[in-house]
Amino acid sequence: MPNTPPGPKAILLNGIVVGEVRSNGNTDQDAEAVRAFLKEKGLHKEVTPFQAVFNQAIAFANTSAHVYEKNLRRTPRNGFSPVPFVVNAAFSIELYLKALAQKHGKALRGHELVKLHLSLPTKAHLEINQVIPKCAANRVLGEQPNFTGYLQHLNDAFVKWRYSYELERIDTVHIEPTIFVMEVLHEACRLP
Image (cartoon, rainbow, N blue to C red; front, side, top):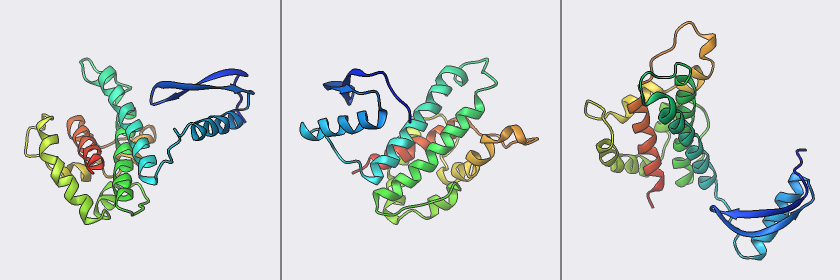
């Protein structure tokens, strides 16, 4: 069980210090003390399954964006960066699809992006189609955007690219269409 140094610990909520608890050095007990403090102050909010998956999707998308901005956006590109970009981007896409399903009361499992996409409720497909034009305007895709085609190309990227060192050759993943798919799913999840 990981421990932290005992002493006063500031409590941050959405980046704002809202109070302080005294840590006894036990991480699990400290986390419970923070939860109790937030509940007592009326600041605790239960996280829905949709929010939990959506937050994870955002975290992996942000990581891929960081890799892109730091190592892939400029030339020369860092040759070690495509793998972490693709793995984080593809996993974020998987989680966005699962979050979109959760938003409509359906739980999905698996890594194959096309199967996950096909399993989405009709309303989720409508939300995806609704945001495609806006998201396409933000990207240089060089063609009419083909969301399902891009998704098909990325279908097993998470599984293959995370073990790319074991493969003799790996399929090319194009950055702009990948970012487009992440953006579309992010925006679809944000719709009311």
